[in-house]
Each structure stands twice: as C-alpha cells, then as structure tokens.
Length: 189
Image (cartoon, rainbow, N blue to C red; front, side, top):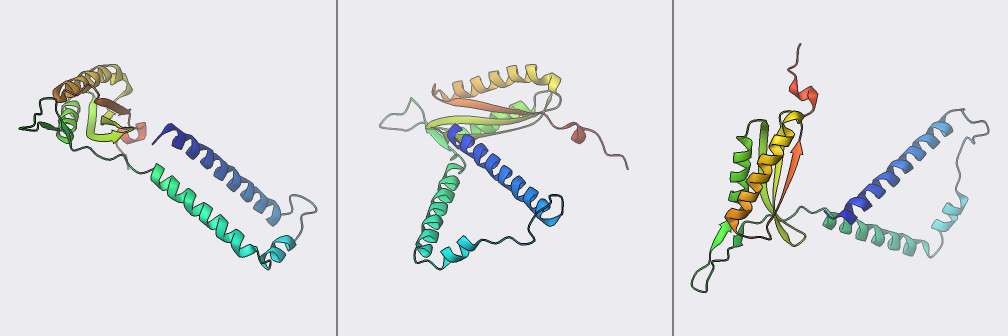
C-alpha cells in the first residue's frame, strides 16, 4: 500500500470517527432532556420536497456512481502485493535459463531466523511492491531486550539472501514484533 493510500485511509477513518461521534452525541442530546429547547421530532421539509423533484433520481444515480467508483478505487488500492515465485538470474543464456525460487529463499531465511535465540517465530515471503522484488520477513521476538542482537542477525541473513540470489535490486524488509505481556504469562484459574 502506498503512502498516499495510507494517508487517505487515516483521513477517512478520522472523518468517519468524528461523524459517528457527532451523530452519537446528537442522539444522546435528542433522546434526553440535557439541552432545554430540544424539539420532540426532527423534520426535513426540504428533503421530502426534493424527493418529488424530477432531478432527484439523477442526483441519486450520480452519487451512487461516485460511491461505487470510490469503493472500487479503495479496493484496488488495498489489494495484497503479488507474490513472486521465481526471478531470472544473470547467468541465463539463450541456450538455458537460470532462475531462483524466491519463495524458497525467503522461507529458508525465515527458518534460519526462527532458529536464532531470542526469536519466537519468523515467516518470510517474496512479493512485488512498487516495481521492486522484496523479501519480506515478519519476526516475533521473545523480549524487547533481544532486539539489538536480533537486528544484527536479521541484517546478516537478509544480506546473505540477497547475495544468494545475485540480484542487487532485490530489497528486503523486516517487521519485528514483540508479543504483549499478557500473552507471555500463564493463566492462573
């Protein structure tokens, strides 16, 4: 997902949240006598007369098309990054083609990370993001104190994976996660 999409998501979420807060507050004020002078009913004479106008169906159609276009744009922006199975290596010739299985490289590197002390689990995958092949790793660490050592190990393994493939344009990204404290402690009944 691009930074623009993330920014638009945050703005839309903030606007929707603010709108819901305002509607909820208005409902509380309307349903109670907290504010004096609140009417017993809400009327919208302009809206009821607009429904009978000849332009109303066209306005509803236009708004509907706009909402459908926005929904499709939102869905296309949030589609997952496509996985990359293989990449062509430099040693390829017209007589033969050399490829590397990037999924296997990512899984092997993740398995090596998972065997590192201080790492609870690790997963890896190869994706195509922003016209660049990227090895993405998600690493769950045991404690935050282990993070500096884990970062060094992760950097070394990512560099090895890129060297193994032989593509200098291959990128790597690692997400480090620390489990919440409540998950670390055993439950007592």
